[in-house]
Image (tube, each protein chain N blue to C red):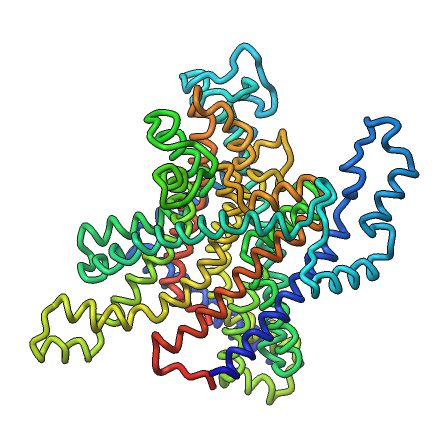
Length: 317
Length: 295
């Protein structure tokens, strides 16, 4: 098992190396450079060639691309993500300050998705072709098809601007405080909706498959209550594929935070990334993409490792 | 002799077509929802083609005297913050969305299917290198890759097409590879090899021809995803540039006015929602028809 974890970690490092390389070189292809964004042409005297050259030298942008890449990798090995060209502050520090907000949003979004998808998916499968089943299938299709930014704006329109029940944007205090909770409800529901449909359909189909299995007839035949049959025997087996997809959905949600954080002015890494893109702040974009991908890679490794706990048939060999 | 062969080949093709046609008709009859989504897909494509004839106003011409007007008989979807007719912009937006969706799909299919065919058929080092590349692309949280590519190449239609196309490559590569792994072991591929058919001929005429079903199904489902991603990118400001009547962009530029005029975000958002819903429904229906599972 330890060998497997080490192997997965090594693969994760390789993947991150690939991501860093792709991001680094694709940013070099981008038109315009960060320094020209920092000193617009209208600034007159400020844009003198000497100042531009000095700034380029300061951020290492005057060196050949390959040299810049090697320097970036060396610094990365020392966990130094460089300094933001726009603010001149360390990117690592800014990411650490924003990571809790993104993590909080992703976890709450996932929680919303699971809390809706699991019970609805189970009921939908147990009462196949009933009204509840049909309603849940429509709901699953709708949540898969609705653009999350539009859903967020509609919620904002209703609950913030019309009813004035919830704050429209921002993050306030700890999650367990009333104010903090009120601020995260809409972003979490909007983000969670992105994964709800897929999870709901998966729980339903996994349950339907398991419900036809012989061992459920055996469980019923030995006189177990229907509730026990469904929750102890069927659900535990149906959860195996759900866990895998849950891991993949974390990736969707981490990517989704970019949109949701923009809609609700949530001070996380996604919003920082969009800000970095607009300012052509390469270190910020590199750092933010790396941070979000790192989260995704870690979750996938965790899912693979805990898979064995859920399904004893899976071995690490 | 050649004439007899040609004749029997064309009869075989007709038979295959009619079998496929019959299966399609049967499914459409069985699933009215799939039939409805197929009709709505044609409607969406029709709106895109005939946008200039359908749109009541010029989508780019504003009128400061008719700013932010609610829906009325003169402007069925109301007007936006610059007094432009929202219905006309939504109609023209269909053109942008369908163009990006279809072109991006072609990019995704061409690259994805090529990688999938090569990795699945040749195996070995080709498979190892190709699939590791796909794994790296898949390790990006989906939309991040699209944001990165689109912002790298600057705003405009082409960067968005490349972004969404490349974003679809891993999906098509994996579907194709999975299907090739199964198909290459089939008897007819062995037979083609035995009579000395060249590798490109086996790949294109025998294997690709037999895995069109799964590719078609995922193309439909990816179309839904392409529409959503196009809207996401434009909403975030890294997609189609203003003043193009792209739906996501329309929602983004109008959201500052939604308190007083909710219709400005309602209709473009509804257009995205309905279009994605239609492609998802069609994709689901086709998946049932071909009984496709991702490998």
